[in-house]
Image 1 (cartoon, rainbow, N blue to C red):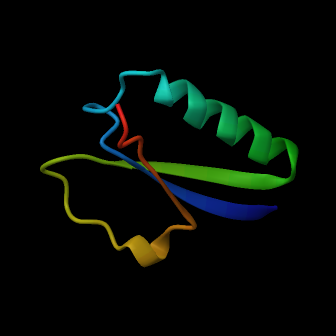
Image 2 (image 1 turned 45 degrees about the vertical axis):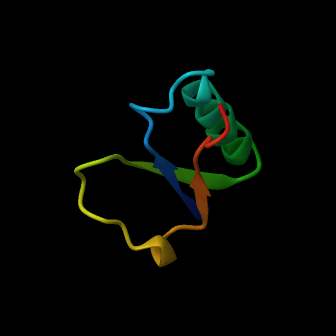
Image 3 (image 1 turned 135 degrees about the vertical axis):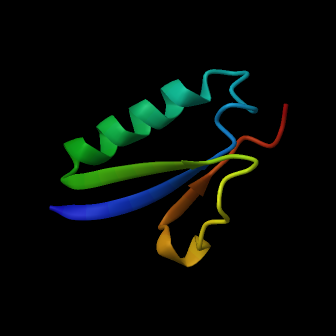
Length: 63
């Protein structure tokens, strides 16, 4: 099974429009297509991630 790493930015701050649900649907749809979706989160105060380690960076910046 192929693996797709997703970095979910600021889930505790930007969770205004159900983005957690969007991430769960994305995970489900990827798994239905044979991918193992690994979702990691990053927020203020966390150690800075190496963006090169991820295949997709998800954040909702427009509110």
